[in-house]
Picture 1 (spheres, helix red, strand yellow):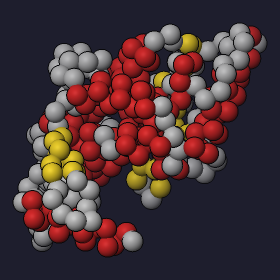
Picture 2 (spheres, helix red, strand yellow):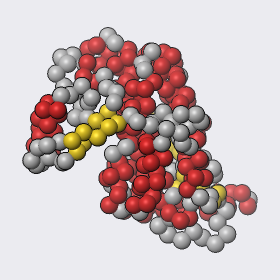
Picture 3 (spheres, rainbow, N blue to C red):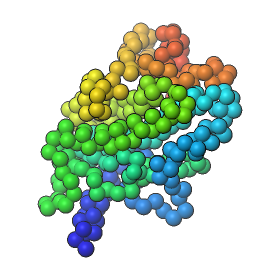
Picture 4 (tube, rainbow, N blue to C red):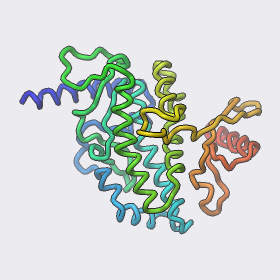
Length: 292
């Protein structure tokens, strides 16, 4: 009985924080996170089941991209980009904005699907969620029964161990073993899905938190991201843009996601490393025109 009461207290407080996040952060981030049981009728699959080898191979081989390319590596890379976009931004945004450390390990998360594709990440059990009170947007309740950490390092350790060591690393190993797709390409996809959000959420987030988290994630060759060398390190570079009406600089990937090789091979991502400078400028202008 006491354990159930403690669980409810933790859930209620996390939902209160999440409601504030929905008001302050772009809905892109909060729409990726589900803390409570999905409604009846929702299509839900554990991420462990989603990553079963036979399921992955069947999904890839049935995809439009594979029909166009007959290349399992290109297909897997684009699939991996979607996985990264649906898994990383929400977890990292809550960590940086609110000091909430969700357990995103494979054994604790499920995808809510829409038309067979990941739409959001459901956290099955919140009991291992940690809170770093110094980042909280509201005071922590007295006698709060959940897990509290007293340093940024401990917050990082909790989030990164589950997210990277117990989710992304085994997922990337699985995809590599099935397709021989470069692991560096997939870690580059992870950086691509998360690196830019720190500039986007800086309007409503403590700048010290932004700088600290960004540095540990992307600028340090050895950090708490993973044991050994940080696989997210040095996978983007800054390129100067000398063109009126455009930003002074832009971020460019060091590895291509292989989108450029999907027939008819006439499109690239704006941050693709295969672009020549003038081609990138033209692409940026086209993108700005389309979004105006």
